[in-house]
Structures are given as C-alpha cells and as structure tokens.
Image (cartoon, rainbow, N blue to C red; front, side):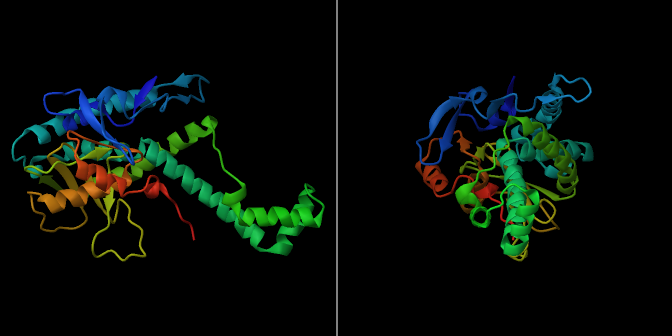
Length: 308
C-alpha cells in the first residue's frame, strides 16, 4: 500500500499556478524539478503493522490518517482561501483537530522515524561506552560472559566500542518498524495538547512565497530561551506553512505578532523549513535563491541526536 506521509490535499496549497497537480521539488545539491504531488512524500506500507491479536497485517493507522485528513482539510482550506482570515474565529474544536493534524504531521514522516532511531542508537552507544570506559570492569564482564577469554582480544573489543561509529553500525531492519510506528503514535498524544495551548497566529505574505517540505513542522527557539535548553513543543515556537502565502505560527505566551510577513520574516521561516527538511522542500516556484538557501543546510542535521 502506498502511504503518503505528507497529505496530498496539503501539498496542493503549494502547487504551481494553473497546474494543481504539479509542484517544484528541491533536493540539496540538485536542481529543482517539476513533479506530481501524488508521486512524492510516499512510501510503501509505511503505516502497515502486524496486529498482535489477529497476527495479520493491518491498515488501521493508514485509515485513521485518511479520516483525520478528511476532517482537517475543510478547516485548512477555509484559512487558506478566505481573504484576511481571522485566526481568532477558529473554534476550540477546530484547534483540537488542527493540533492533532500538526502533531501527526510531525511524527508520521520519515524524518521523525530517523530521529527516533538516532535517539535509540545514541542510548545504546552511551551504555556500551560507559561499560568500556572502565577497563577492569569491562575485562571482568567479558570473562564472565565467556565469549572472549584472551585479554588482548578483550582489549581490542573495548577499544572498538570506545570508537563505536568507526567499527559498528546499528541496523534496526524492517522487523522493528512496528515499534517505531507505535512510539510515534504515543508521542503524538503528548505533543498535541502542547500545540493546542499555544497562542495561535496566522502570518500572511503578499508576494514572497512560503515553502514546505517532507517534514513541514518547524520548531523555533524563542529569543529568551537559554542556549543550553533544548527546544521542544512546550517551550518552543511552532511554524507550519499551510500555503504559499500563509503560515501558522504558534507561540508560548502572549506577544505582538505582525499579521503581514515581510521578506525577512518569510525567509526566516523558510530557513527553518529548510533546516528541518528530511530530503526535499517543495514550492510553486523554481527560484535560484530558494535553491541556494536550501543548499546551505545539511541533510540529517535536524535528526542528529547528541547525548552527553
């Protein structure tokens, strides 16, 4: 089953004028190319899992996403298509649905799954290196396991673990996809309320276009947040472009947000979209400055995990 991890109805808000099925795709270090929305941001059987009760493959998650997209599409289309839309006119029910959609938009894609694997891998490497740091402890444990008896081989293994990335690679394989899918679904339930209780704003651009990506939700560090603090959904700002001329900005605390976004604001938000992009960004235009700015970002930078 072909599973789209960024909905097609959403991508249509960024399609080329008079070509509702086509969009420009940018990849780092490559020229932008025109493609159809149905041909991108999709992977076979991404949400298909093995039901423990029946032992059979299930598409319940894919059907749940389809249902949610059907509910949220009219709300987003209303915001996009209505001139000078007043964000305060959204009902609490509208915000609940949008919060769920934004949370899943963040957790259902390949970038989030890669980040979760990186977190898991970093934890494994940290524990292994912790044991290898103590030479006598490592030697004793290796002897007790009776895997290696030779002290020289034990020391070679210890040094290899201390230089883990040089000698080993963690491969989770397809058999662990269900675990990461379940983890993403559970985390979404924690993210969604944090989104709902933000201060909601809608930024509009008259001419400079917003871009989107294969990982459209961006976290922005507030100016008053110390650099040693991590940025998350509770303490950070959240930007979600919803069309080429409109972007949702959800902030912590009340503040004065200008409704009209100038070129500098749009470029700032686009910069975050580019940073968080897994592999691709998308736009209704093929512009050299978008291409150049995207090339300044590094693939995988937003998914990197460091555990001290």
